[in-house]
Length: 253
Length: 352
Image (tube, rainbow over all chains, first blue to last red; front, side):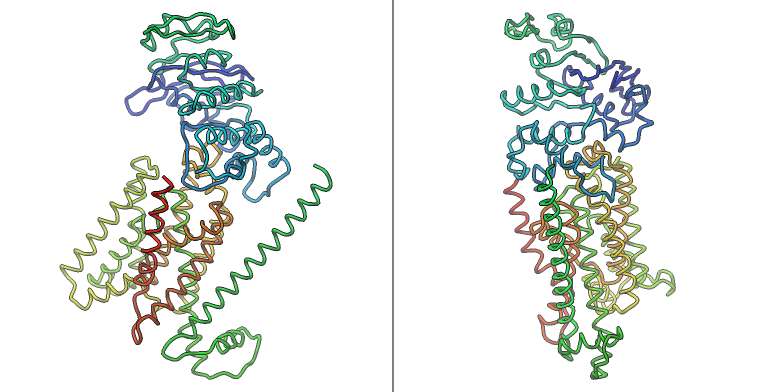
């Protein structure tokens, strides 16, 4: 098991955001996180990436509590893509991707061949090589998100945590990004809004409501008419897609 | 990687190194040039050659016969003044660059943390209220005031689990508070002459600085520059915000503490010596960014160099713009700074 959450609880003041979550992400697989707005998806991802400390319970990486792992060592194996992170600095794409090498470099070490190789391959995988010298401000939303992904890949992570990376992207870029992430040989945990995309690309799913897990398992087991009604309050029919054999959701008007 | 690629990589590195050396030499030449010009200007003009000869003499390199009065003026008054201006300009520009990056706000500047307001309160407390009964100098009062304001901001923004916006708001609150305290002291207990003296001091002047001030400011700003260079990559990592920096492995709390601390010490030292000189810390980082790009390994030295040259040039302007009279340096920097500020605002509006 790579990332594991063990009875995770997180509170802000008296308000419980994450309420006793336990699950395990399978190595090399893509774990989708579904749930209505405010169900605690983003908070959970922050806890998994070690950006916030849980009130109780723990997150483990290969069985080791991440509270015992230093910030830098953590960043050497877990990459995090925030929702909609932007900057007003006119950085080039290549500069942003190079930031991914930060945890692997000490204060005095120079730029190594390994750093260069990681950046080059990250740019290639995300098809951003041609845009490497473009400025951040000139990029489209899809290109920005791909640059973030390239930065995360340059970190050479074993685990990738993504918070709704397809928001604000057109359908072409959404599918492209999902395909790219699902083809990666690393463990990924991804928060999503589009249930059809989650069903199509994720290996397993967790559905959250009010900080608790209400369903988990393979897309076929998790996505049901009852769940969509109870958790998302929508009337829908689920059938197996004739094109990709994963569940497909028809929302009923 | 093929041998040819390694070779070309080596050649590239070598030529980049040569370029770096050339740029640094050119900058050093530029700074010594403007310092020479600054030393030459005044009631008694001194030719450039005498200035350099006098410096070389003192360093024991040469033994050129010089006018004794010239030598005294150069050494005891003007050279220390010009060199303090060099380090003040560099320090304010570095502080501005740090704050703009850390607070992710293009309009941040060294005084955004309330430091100038605190310094002015400290000054009037010493000059007008007579705090410390003569045991505390005006500079020490300014330094204490500046740090009081800085801690006030730190307390206020950490109490709010400080992000960038909270820090800026806390700085605004601190500035208002300390400015009000200054005005209160001046209006209730100052006489007209004292108020005028304080005003003049607040607008900035290099008139009173000598070698002891140079020693202090050069050490403080020197350390500041070293810290900036060591933290250059960390500052880059803050480009997408605190959370992104943390996810890249930056110890955000420690980095913020160290960088804010360095800014506060540099700014407080400078303000306590020469008053609050505005706009250098705001304008110079933008100009430097325009020239060398946003990466801090280059930006920081560029800020130091441009800031130094700008400040000495402003000091020269303050002495020659109106014959027989020295303008407060803050007036000169603001006169140049405000039009530049307008351009930044205009560009910023277009970009967003």
